[in-house]
Image (cartoon, rainbow, N blue to C red):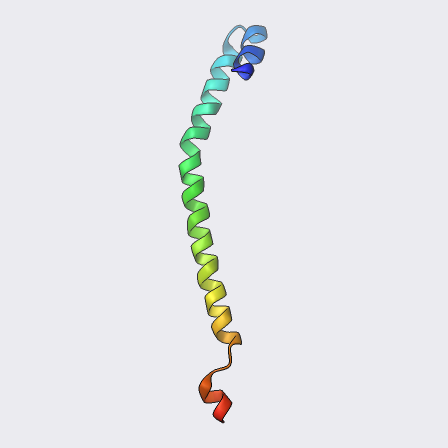
Length: 64
């Protein structure tokens, strides 16, 4: 609201409209960003699991 007042009064309403557009963009982009973060986290978890398996000694290697 403060952004709308501060931007809207000096610019004759254009700043308020820009503020609304920016807020709408943020609301539309938020779920997409969350999905991207979730998929990246899942990918990193899989990579760390693979790395952990490589660093853990195998039972066959211990015997040989």
